[in-house]
Every structure is written in structure tokens, then in C-alpha cells.
Length: 396
Image 1 (tube, rainbow, N blue to C red):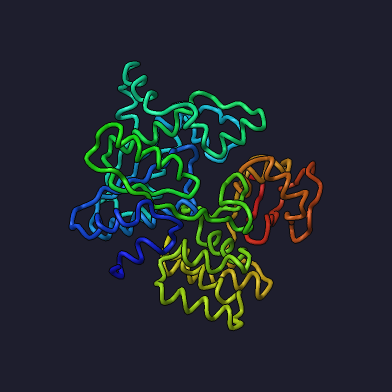
Image 2 (cartoon, rainbow, N blue to C red):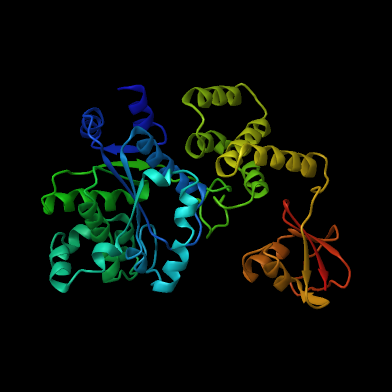
């Protein structure tokens, strides 16, 4: 296998279906169509999404046609993969709001000039009932219930909606309409992507897609998959300071996996880092390099150096950042929970309460543990949320 193909088919890859067929395609000289679909069910992308986007970029660099499919229609259902209960249906307004920043964030990895961006509302929005019935006739209910999460829900007497059973069919039909040669996705998407192969066969497509599955990246806690739900994510759009600090917080046993899946360092560098860790290199030094790599990827090298300097100053020298944002708020007294949301130190009141209850909040260097605290901001107050977030607030 050529070196480039080896990197494409092995680095950050769990399984290739069917590997021999895909190798033939790669060596044929044909320009392949590579599909990756993402539903805009949230507003932000994180480096867990980056794993598969980076694989798509490898095909893009090879000269193939990279297709970013925005599932603006399937997002109304919500992918049931891994869910123990039926998801709430998103409104069209919510979907449009979530889509706004997806492409902008994806551009941090992909070359937009060489990217084919499609929306599955292009075909699903025009379907009539006869076409829908034709689609549903392609699979049986018993076939759809072979999905592990569906089987578990049946076993536990939990509901499965008809629309959820339709989801894999719809994802498969996307492959028919896009005439994809390869589909990329996480290991949790294997069933859906295999349905895509079957749908292409059923509809008599000229090409049948091969499948590359990539690992699911655990979040900064090293346990749960990276997700905003678990508050263990590193977002594409987060500040250099946040990306750097979060990277430094990962467990030591996740260092190699993050380097392999979330950065663009070479195979050779990866082996050197792995060897250094085994020979007793201080994990902190390797995490500092990881943090620099991530900040440079999503911002630039100068931002990485600044973030590292600030991190070192705060944690090694037990100081505070040289520059702390000052926010002026109307009024003299504010409920602390409300203030944390208003200043964007937390994204919700629930997160604010958890932060306070878990001892993660300081006001003027003093820990605050009462969620009902009312803060007087007639004079400037220094608020520290967690280890990395600092802000000064004062009434105006």
C-alpha cells in the first residue's frame, strides 16, 4: 500500500468496508466522491467532529471531491444513534440558527474552495408520498430493528418513533442522491452507512460506497464521548486560552489518542511522543505541546504561544492573566447565578449553580458556595470561574 494510502486508511481509522474495493478505487486514478454528513442539531463543532473532518480533508488533499452534507432535513428528526429515548423534534428556525456557523467552523479544517456543500432538503423537500413509500419499501422493520440501540430500547420497553426508523433510510438515500464512492463517519454510524450501501444497490447506482469509520473521541474527562451535554468538549470557536487550558486538563492516558486524532502531526512524530511517554517523559510537557498544536490549528501559532505564556503564568506562577476583561453592568446588585450567565462565564443557570456548588467559583479570591448569593458590584469585583476564566465586573 502506498504511504499516502496507508495514512488515509489506517491513521485514526477503526474499520474500512470494503478495504480491498476501496484500495482499487484509490489506485484507479478516478476522482472519488467522499461524503460526510452532519445534522445541525447544535450550534457548535468540537474537536470530536474534527476527527472525521480531518479524514475528509485527507481525501480533499488527494484531489477527490469532498462533500459536506448538511442534514437540514434529517435534523428535524434527529439521529437516534445512541439515544435511549426519542429526541425532541427541532423547528425549522432552530435548524437554520444552528446551521449559521457550521460551515464557517468547518473551514478551519476544510478548504471551502474545493468543498461541495449540499443540503438534504434539496431532495427530501421535494418528495411526494409515492416516493416516500418507495423509499420505505427498501427495508423491512425487522432489518431496522437490528440496530443495537433500537434492540436495547425494545428490550427496556422504551418507545421508538416511526420517524426514527426512517432516519437510517434517509441517510442511506443521501448516498444515492450524492452518488458517493466513500462515506465517512464515527463507529456509531456503521449501521446507517451500511444502509447507504444497500440503498445504492437497491436504486441501481453505478457505484457502491465503501465505508471508513473513525473512533469516537472521549472528552476532556477521558470517559464520556466529547459532547456539550457532558461539558467535556473543546470547541472550534473557543478562545486560544480556553482551548489551551482544556487540553492541559485531559487525563494522561488520553495524550496519544488526542495527538493521533485531533492534530496533524506526522506518524513519525506520533511514534516519538509515544516512545517518550513510555520512557518517563513528564506528561505535562507533552500536554503543553498538544495544547499548542490545537490552538495553532484553530487559531494560529502566535495565539498558541500567548496562550501558553498565560497558562504558565496563572498555574506555574500562581498568578492571574496580564489582561482581564472588564464588564460594566447596569445596577448595583445582581444575583450571582444570573451574573455568571450574563457575563458568559457559564452558558446556563444550571451550569452556574453546579459551578458554585462544586466550589469552582471565587469572588475577589474568596470561594463562594451559596447559589443564592447576591453580589454588590458598586465597586469592581474580580470573578474567577473554574481555573481559567477571569472577569472584572462593575456597576455603571
